[in-house]
Image (cartoon, rainbow, N blue to C red):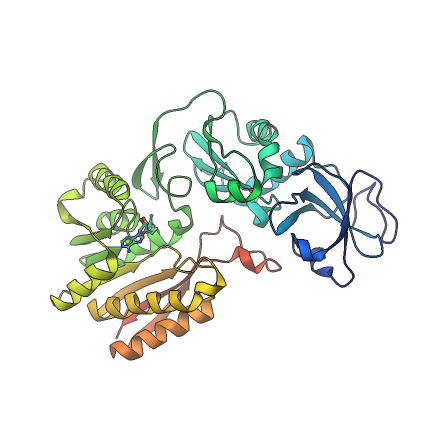
Length: 401
Ligand code: SAH
Protein backbone atom coordinates (compact mmCIF):
# COMPACT_ATOMS: atom_id res chain seq x y z
CA UNK A 1 0.00 0.00 0.00
CA UNK A 2 1.21 3.51 -0.74
CA UNK A 3 1.82 5.71 2.31
CA UNK A 4 -0.40 8.70 2.90
CA UNK A 5 0.51 11.55 0.61
CA UNK A 6 1.70 9.31 -2.24
CA UNK A 7 -0.01 9.97 -5.55
CA UNK A 8 -2.52 7.48 -6.83
CA UNK A 9 -1.58 5.89 -10.14
CA UNK A 10 -2.38 8.32 -12.91
CA UNK A 11 -2.15 11.47 -10.80
CA UNK A 12 0.60 13.91 -11.58
CA UNK A 13 3.44 14.29 -9.09
CA UNK A 14 3.85 17.66 -7.48
CA UNK A 15 7.37 18.52 -6.52
CA UNK A 16 10.55 19.81 -8.18
CA UNK A 17 12.39 19.00 -11.41
CA UNK A 18 11.03 16.17 -13.52
CA UNK A 19 12.67 13.51 -15.68
CA UNK A 20 10.29 11.99 -18.21
CA UNK A 21 11.03 8.52 -19.56
CA UNK A 22 10.55 7.54 -23.17
CA UNK A 23 7.60 5.35 -23.98
CA UNK A 24 8.36 1.67 -23.34
CA UNK A 25 11.19 2.33 -20.86
CA UNK A 26 9.23 0.73 -18.05
CA UNK A 27 12.22 -1.10 -16.57
CA UNK A 28 12.65 1.84 -14.20
CA UNK A 29 9.60 0.57 -12.28
CA UNK A 30 11.58 -2.38 -10.93
CA UNK A 31 15.23 -1.45 -11.52
CA UNK A 32 16.91 1.73 -10.21
CA UNK A 33 19.03 2.57 -13.26
CA UNK A 34 18.03 5.07 -15.93
CA UNK A 35 20.37 5.59 -18.87
CA UNK A 36 20.49 8.66 -21.09
CA UNK A 37 18.83 6.70 -23.87
CA UNK A 38 15.80 6.08 -21.62
CA UNK A 39 15.14 9.80 -21.11
CA UNK A 40 12.63 11.77 -23.20
CA UNK A 41 13.35 15.07 -21.45
CA UNK A 42 14.44 16.48 -18.14
CA UNK A 43 13.87 19.90 -16.57
CA UNK A 44 16.76 22.19 -15.65
CA UNK A 45 18.39 20.69 -12.59
CA UNK A 46 21.73 20.93 -10.80
CA UNK A 47 23.99 17.93 -11.43
CA UNK A 48 23.55 15.52 -8.52
CA UNK A 49 20.20 16.94 -7.42
CA UNK A 50 17.02 14.92 -7.03
CA UNK A 51 14.46 14.60 -9.82
CA UNK A 52 10.99 13.13 -9.92
CA UNK A 53 10.84 10.39 -12.56
CA UNK A 54 7.63 10.00 -14.53
CA UNK A 55 6.67 7.70 -17.38
CA UNK A 56 5.80 8.88 -20.89
CA UNK A 57 2.22 9.52 -19.77
CA UNK A 58 3.39 11.61 -16.81
CA UNK A 59 2.62 9.01 -14.14
CA UNK A 60 4.88 8.94 -11.08
CA UNK A 61 7.63 6.27 -11.23
CA UNK A 62 9.97 7.34 -8.44
CA UNK A 63 12.50 9.88 -7.31
CA UNK A 64 16.26 9.72 -7.78
CA UNK A 65 19.54 11.55 -8.23
CA UNK A 66 20.23 13.01 -11.67
CA UNK A 67 23.68 13.57 -13.15
CA UNK A 68 24.00 14.51 -16.85
CA UNK A 69 27.66 13.44 -16.97
CA UNK A 70 27.66 9.59 -16.92
CA UNK A 71 25.60 7.43 -19.29
CA UNK A 72 23.81 6.05 -16.23
CA UNK A 73 22.30 9.45 -15.55
CA UNK A 74 19.73 8.73 -12.83
CA UNK A 75 19.43 6.21 -10.02
CA UNK A 76 16.07 5.86 -8.35
CA UNK A 77 16.13 5.97 -4.55
CA UNK A 78 12.43 5.73 -3.84
CA UNK A 79 9.23 4.68 -5.58
CA UNK A 80 7.14 6.64 -3.10
CA UNK A 81 6.39 10.35 -3.39
CA UNK A 82 8.65 11.34 -0.51
CA UNK A 83 11.48 13.85 -0.13
CA UNK A 84 15.07 12.55 -0.34
CA UNK A 85 16.03 14.34 2.87
CA UNK A 86 17.78 13.56 6.14
CA UNK A 87 14.75 11.69 7.51
CA UNK A 88 14.67 9.53 4.36
CA UNK A 89 18.36 8.62 4.74
CA UNK A 90 17.84 7.75 8.38
CA UNK A 91 14.90 5.47 7.53
CA UNK A 92 16.81 3.74 4.74
CA UNK A 93 19.96 3.25 6.84
CA UNK A 94 17.84 2.06 9.75
CA UNK A 95 16.14 -0.53 7.52
CA UNK A 96 19.49 -1.67 6.09
CA UNK A 97 20.98 -2.14 9.55
CA UNK A 98 17.83 -3.83 10.85
CA UNK A 99 18.07 -6.45 8.08
CA UNK A 100 21.51 -7.40 9.35
CA UNK A 101 20.94 -7.31 13.06
CA UNK A 102 21.31 -10.40 15.17
CA UNK A 103 21.67 -9.22 18.74
CA UNK A 104 22.90 -5.69 17.98
CA UNK A 105 24.53 -3.85 15.11
CA UNK A 106 27.22 -6.20 13.75
CA UNK A 107 30.74 -5.19 14.79
CA UNK A 108 32.21 -6.27 11.45
CA UNK A 109 30.48 -6.18 8.10
CA UNK A 110 28.65 -4.19 5.48
CA UNK A 111 25.84 -2.15 6.99
CA UNK A 112 24.57 -0.64 3.74
CA UNK A 113 25.24 -1.64 0.16
CA UNK A 114 24.16 0.79 -2.48
CA UNK A 115 21.31 -0.31 -4.81
CA UNK A 116 20.83 -3.53 -2.84
CA UNK A 117 19.73 -1.46 0.17
CA UNK A 118 17.87 1.23 -1.75
CA UNK A 119 20.78 3.64 -1.31
CA UNK A 120 22.46 3.82 -4.74
CA UNK A 121 25.96 5.25 -4.49
CA UNK A 122 26.46 4.60 -0.77
CA UNK A 123 28.46 1.89 0.96
CA UNK A 124 28.85 1.77 4.73
CA UNK A 125 31.14 -0.81 6.32
CA UNK A 126 31.77 -1.29 10.00
CA UNK A 127 35.19 -2.25 11.30
CA UNK A 128 34.77 -2.53 15.07
CA UNK A 129 34.93 1.04 16.42
CA UNK A 130 35.09 2.71 12.99
CA UNK A 131 32.70 3.22 10.07
CA UNK A 132 34.05 3.45 6.53
CA UNK A 133 31.85 5.30 4.05
CA UNK A 134 32.19 5.19 0.28
CA UNK A 135 30.23 7.52 -1.99
CA UNK A 136 30.04 6.48 -5.62
CA UNK A 137 27.64 9.02 -7.08
CA UNK A 138 27.59 12.80 -7.15
CA UNK A 139 24.15 12.75 -5.55
CA UNK A 140 25.38 10.74 -2.56
CA UNK A 141 28.62 12.74 -2.30
CA UNK A 142 26.52 15.90 -1.99
CA UNK A 143 24.65 14.34 0.96
CA UNK A 144 27.74 13.19 2.79
CA UNK A 145 27.10 15.35 5.88
CA UNK A 146 23.51 14.13 6.11
CA UNK A 147 24.70 10.53 5.77
CA UNK A 148 27.17 11.02 8.63
CA UNK A 149 24.48 12.55 10.83
CA UNK A 150 22.03 9.75 10.01
CA UNK A 151 24.70 7.12 10.80
CA UNK A 152 25.26 8.75 14.17
CA UNK A 153 21.57 8.32 14.94
CA UNK A 154 21.27 4.76 13.56
CA UNK A 155 24.58 3.16 14.55
CA UNK A 156 25.93 5.50 17.24
CA UNK A 157 28.66 8.13 17.30
CA UNK A 158 31.54 6.21 15.72
CA UNK A 159 34.35 7.97 13.84
CA UNK A 160 33.67 7.92 10.09
CA UNK A 161 36.44 7.41 7.55
CA UNK A 162 35.68 8.43 3.95
CA UNK A 163 37.19 6.16 1.30
CA UNK A 164 35.74 7.06 -2.09
CA UNK A 165 37.10 5.29 -5.16
CA UNK A 166 38.75 7.48 -7.79
CA UNK A 167 37.09 5.79 -10.82
CA UNK A 168 33.43 6.46 -9.95
CA UNK A 169 34.28 9.94 -8.60
CA UNK A 170 35.90 10.87 -11.92
CA UNK A 171 33.01 9.45 -13.91
CA UNK A 172 30.44 11.29 -11.81
CA UNK A 173 32.48 14.50 -11.50
CA UNK A 174 33.24 14.97 -7.82
CA UNK A 175 36.37 15.18 -5.72
CA UNK A 176 36.80 11.80 -4.00
CA UNK A 177 36.94 12.09 -0.21
CA UNK A 178 39.75 10.32 1.64
CA UNK A 179 40.17 10.66 5.36
CA UNK A 180 38.28 11.22 8.57
CA UNK A 181 34.95 12.96 8.23
CA UNK A 182 35.19 14.79 11.55
CA UNK A 183 36.72 13.61 14.77
CA UNK A 184 39.68 11.39 13.76
CA UNK A 185 39.62 7.76 14.83
CA UNK A 186 42.50 5.31 15.30
CA UNK A 187 45.09 4.88 12.53
CA UNK A 188 44.65 1.11 12.66
CA UNK A 189 41.89 -1.16 13.90
CA UNK A 190 41.86 -4.80 14.86
CA UNK A 191 38.73 -6.75 14.01
CA UNK A 192 37.55 -10.21 14.95
CA UNK A 193 36.13 -12.42 12.19
CA UNK A 194 34.80 -15.60 13.78
CA UNK A 195 37.75 -15.86 16.14
CA UNK A 196 40.39 -14.81 13.61
CA UNK A 197 41.96 -11.38 14.04
CA UNK A 198 42.75 -8.95 11.23
CA UNK A 199 44.48 -5.60 11.50
CA UNK A 200 43.85 -2.90 8.98
CA UNK A 201 45.19 0.58 8.49
CA UNK A 202 42.39 2.99 7.64
CA UNK A 203 42.65 4.27 4.12
CA UNK A 204 45.19 1.64 3.07
CA UNK A 205 44.52 -1.24 0.73
CA UNK A 206 41.65 -2.42 -1.43
CA UNK A 207 37.92 -1.93 -1.00
CA UNK A 208 37.17 -0.35 2.36
CA UNK A 209 39.97 -2.37 4.00
CA UNK A 210 38.94 -6.02 3.83
CA UNK A 211 37.07 -8.17 1.33
CA UNK A 212 34.03 -8.40 3.58
CA UNK A 213 32.09 -10.26 0.87
CA UNK A 214 34.20 -13.39 1.49
CA UNK A 215 33.54 -13.60 5.22
CA UNK A 216 31.23 -16.61 5.08
CA UNK A 217 33.51 -18.46 2.67
CA UNK A 218 36.53 -17.86 4.89
CA UNK A 219 34.64 -19.49 7.78
CA UNK A 220 33.89 -22.44 5.56
CA UNK A 221 37.60 -22.83 4.81
CA UNK A 222 38.36 -22.97 8.54
CA UNK A 223 36.08 -26.01 8.77
CA UNK A 224 37.76 -27.81 5.86
CA UNK A 225 41.38 -27.12 6.71
CA UNK A 226 42.33 -29.51 9.55
CA UNK A 227 45.59 -31.37 8.79
CA UNK A 228 45.68 -30.07 5.23
CA UNK A 229 48.35 -28.30 3.22
CA UNK A 230 46.66 -25.16 1.97
CA UNK A 231 47.25 -22.93 -1.03
CA UNK A 232 45.76 -19.41 -0.82
CA UNK A 233 46.21 -17.88 -4.26
CA UNK A 234 45.46 -14.15 -4.71
CA UNK A 235 45.56 -13.95 -0.91
CA UNK A 236 45.40 -10.14 -0.39
CA UNK A 237 46.02 -9.77 3.38
CA UNK A 238 45.85 -13.51 3.98
CA UNK A 239 42.25 -13.87 5.14
CA UNK A 240 41.67 -17.40 3.89
CA UNK A 241 45.11 -18.60 5.00
CA UNK A 242 44.63 -17.23 8.53
CA UNK A 243 41.30 -19.01 8.87
CA UNK A 244 42.75 -22.24 7.47
CA UNK A 245 45.74 -22.19 9.81
CA UNK A 246 43.62 -21.37 12.83
CA UNK A 247 41.34 -24.20 11.71
CA UNK A 248 44.22 -26.65 12.01
CA UNK A 249 45.90 -26.64 8.59
CA UNK A 250 49.40 -28.11 8.60
CA UNK A 251 50.85 -25.29 6.55
CA UNK A 252 49.79 -22.66 4.05
CA UNK A 253 51.36 -21.16 0.96
CA UNK A 254 50.13 -17.64 0.15
CA UNK A 255 50.51 -16.10 -3.30
CA UNK A 256 50.04 -12.39 -3.93
CA UNK A 257 51.58 -9.79 -6.24
CA UNK A 258 50.98 -6.57 -4.27
CA UNK A 259 53.73 -5.77 -1.73
CA UNK A 260 51.30 -3.68 0.33
CA UNK A 261 48.84 -6.59 0.57
CA UNK A 262 51.67 -8.97 1.47
CA UNK A 263 52.78 -6.72 4.31
CA UNK A 264 49.20 -6.93 5.62
CA UNK A 265 49.24 -10.72 5.25
CA UNK A 266 52.45 -10.94 7.27
CA UNK A 267 50.92 -8.83 10.06
CA UNK A 268 47.74 -10.91 10.12
CA UNK A 269 49.62 -14.24 10.21
CA UNK A 270 51.64 -12.96 13.17
CA UNK A 271 48.60 -11.56 14.94
CA UNK A 272 47.01 -15.01 14.81
CA UNK A 273 50.18 -16.79 15.91
CA UNK A 274 50.38 -18.90 12.75
CA UNK A 275 53.23 -17.21 10.83
CA UNK A 276 55.66 -20.10 11.34
CA UNK A 277 53.37 -22.44 9.39
CA UNK A 278 52.97 -20.03 6.49
CA UNK A 279 55.08 -19.40 3.42
CA UNK A 280 54.51 -16.17 1.55
CA UNK A 281 55.30 -16.04 -2.16
CA UNK A 282 55.42 -12.60 -3.78
CA UNK A 283 54.61 -13.52 -7.38
CA UNK A 284 52.21 -13.45 -10.26
CA UNK A 285 49.82 -16.26 -9.35
CA UNK A 286 49.61 -17.44 -12.98
CA UNK A 287 53.38 -18.08 -13.01
CA UNK A 288 53.50 -19.54 -9.51
CA UNK A 289 50.63 -21.97 -10.12
CA UNK A 290 52.44 -23.20 -13.24
CA UNK A 291 55.70 -23.52 -11.31
CA UNK A 292 54.06 -25.45 -8.46
CA UNK A 293 52.46 -27.81 -10.96
CA UNK A 294 55.81 -28.46 -12.68
CA UNK A 295 57.40 -29.06 -9.28
CA UNK A 296 54.79 -31.74 -8.52
CA UNK A 297 53.35 -29.91 -5.49
CA UNK A 298 50.07 -31.16 -3.95
CA UNK A 299 47.58 -29.47 -1.62
CA UNK A 300 44.57 -30.66 0.33
CA UNK A 301 42.83 -27.29 0.08
CA UNK A 302 43.18 -24.65 -2.61
CA UNK A 303 41.53 -21.21 -2.65
CA UNK A 304 41.44 -19.21 -5.88
CA UNK A 305 40.09 -15.71 -5.30
CA UNK A 306 41.39 -13.59 -8.19
CA UNK A 307 40.54 -9.96 -8.92
CA UNK A 308 37.84 -9.33 -11.55
CA UNK A 309 39.35 -10.34 -14.89
CA UNK A 310 36.36 -8.87 -16.79
CA UNK A 311 35.46 -5.30 -15.92
CA UNK A 312 33.30 -4.99 -19.01
CA UNK A 313 31.42 -7.33 -21.30
CA UNK A 314 34.01 -6.92 -24.07
CA UNK A 315 36.65 -8.47 -21.80
CA UNK A 316 34.50 -11.51 -21.07
CA UNK A 317 36.13 -14.06 -23.36
CA UNK A 318 39.68 -13.12 -22.33
CA UNK A 319 38.56 -13.27 -18.70
CA UNK A 320 37.06 -16.72 -19.16
CA UNK A 321 40.38 -17.95 -20.60
CA UNK A 322 42.20 -16.55 -17.55
CA UNK A 323 39.81 -18.14 -15.06
CA UNK A 324 39.98 -21.43 -16.93
CA UNK A 325 43.76 -21.48 -16.85
CA UNK A 326 44.11 -20.91 -13.11
CA UNK A 327 41.37 -23.42 -12.35
CA UNK A 328 42.98 -26.04 -14.53
CA UNK A 329 46.28 -25.59 -12.67
CA UNK A 330 44.59 -25.61 -9.27
CA UNK A 331 42.76 -28.85 -10.11
CA UNK A 332 46.07 -30.49 -11.00
CA UNK A 333 47.50 -29.41 -7.65
CA UNK A 334 44.68 -31.01 -5.63
CA UNK A 335 45.32 -34.26 -3.83
CA UNK A 336 42.55 -36.88 -3.79
CA UNK A 337 39.79 -35.81 -1.42
CA UNK A 338 41.13 -32.27 -1.48
CA UNK A 339 38.86 -29.22 -1.71
CA UNK A 340 38.97 -26.35 -4.16
CA UNK A 341 37.16 -23.10 -3.40
CA UNK A 342 37.15 -21.10 -6.58
CA UNK A 343 35.66 -17.69 -7.31
CA UNK A 344 35.00 -15.02 -9.90
CA UNK A 345 33.98 -11.54 -8.75
CA UNK A 346 33.33 -10.29 -12.33
CA UNK A 347 29.61 -9.69 -12.44
CA UNK A 348 29.68 -10.35 -16.20
CA UNK A 349 30.60 -13.97 -15.39
CA UNK A 350 27.36 -15.57 -14.23
CA UNK A 351 27.29 -18.59 -11.95
CA UNK A 352 26.27 -20.71 -14.95
CA UNK A 353 29.18 -19.39 -17.06
CA UNK A 354 31.55 -19.94 -14.16
CA UNK A 355 30.43 -23.54 -13.74
CA UNK A 356 30.84 -24.09 -17.45
CA UNK A 357 34.40 -22.80 -17.47
CA UNK A 358 35.26 -24.91 -14.42
CA UNK A 359 33.79 -27.92 -16.24
CA UNK A 360 36.02 -27.19 -19.24
CA UNK A 361 39.03 -26.82 -16.96
CA UNK A 362 38.28 -30.15 -15.25
CA UNK A 363 37.90 -31.89 -18.62
CA UNK A 364 41.26 -30.53 -19.79
CA UNK A 365 42.94 -31.33 -16.48
CA UNK A 366 41.50 -34.86 -16.50
CA UNK A 367 40.12 -34.17 -13.01
CA UNK A 368 37.03 -35.80 -11.48
CA UNK A 369 35.45 -33.40 -9.01
CA UNK A 370 32.33 -33.44 -6.91
CA UNK A 371 30.25 -30.25 -6.94
CA UNK A 372 29.84 -29.87 -3.20
CA UNK A 373 28.17 -26.45 -3.12
CA UNK A 374 27.81 -23.20 -5.00
CA UNK A 375 29.46 -20.27 -3.23
CA UNK A 376 28.58 -16.59 -3.31
CA UNK A 377 28.95 -13.25 -1.52
CA UNK A 378 28.18 -12.81 2.18
CA UNK A 379 24.53 -12.18 3.02
CA UNK A 380 25.20 -8.57 4.05
CA UNK A 381 25.82 -7.98 0.33
CA UNK A 382 22.19 -8.86 -0.47
CA UNK A 383 21.09 -9.97 -3.92
CA UNK A 384 17.91 -8.27 -5.09
CA UNK A 385 15.89 -10.39 -7.49
CA UNK A 386 14.97 -7.50 -9.81
CA UNK A 387 18.53 -6.10 -9.79
CA UNK A 388 20.69 -8.91 -11.17
CA UNK A 389 23.80 -6.69 -10.98
CA UNK A 390 23.70 -7.09 -7.20
CA UNK A 391 24.91 -10.66 -7.63
CA UNK A 392 28.56 -10.56 -8.63
CA UNK A 393 30.47 -13.23 -6.74
CA UNK A 394 30.28 -16.62 -8.43
CA UNK A 395 31.93 -19.57 -6.81
CA UNK A 396 32.13 -23.30 -6.33
CA UNK A 397 33.28 -25.67 -3.65
CA UNK A 398 34.67 -28.72 -5.45
CA UNK A 399 36.17 -31.88 -4.05
CA UNK A 400 38.61 -34.14 -5.87
CA UNK A 401 37.22 -37.68 -6.19
N1 SAH B 1 41.12 -13.64 -0.87
C1 SAH B 1 41.34 -12.28 -0.44
C2 SAH B 1 40.91 -11.26 -1.46
C3 SAH B 1 41.59 -11.40 -2.79
S1 SAH B 1 41.40 -10.01 -3.84
C4 SAH B 1 40.67 -12.07 0.90
O1 SAH B 1 39.90 -12.95 1.36
O2 SAH B 1 40.90 -11.04 1.53
C5 SAH B 1 42.47 -10.40 -5.15
C6 SAH B 1 43.96 -10.18 -4.85
O3 SAH B 1 44.69 -10.65 -5.97
C7 SAH B 1 44.37 -8.74 -4.65
O4 SAH B 1 45.00 -8.62 -3.40
C8 SAH B 1 45.37 -8.45 -5.77
O5 SAH B 1 46.47 -7.65 -5.36
C9 SAH B 1 45.85 -9.83 -6.12
N2 SAH B 1 46.34 -10.03 -7.49
C10 SAH B 1 45.87 -9.48 -8.63
N3 SAH B 1 46.48 -9.99 -9.70
C11 SAH B 1 47.38 -10.91 -9.24
C12 SAH B 1 48.31 -11.79 -9.86
N4 SAH B 1 48.42 -11.85 -11.20
N5 SAH B 1 49.04 -12.59 -9.09
C13 SAH B 1 48.93 -12.56 -7.74
N6 SAH B 1 48.05 -11.75 -7.08
C14 SAH B 1 47.29 -10.94 -7.83
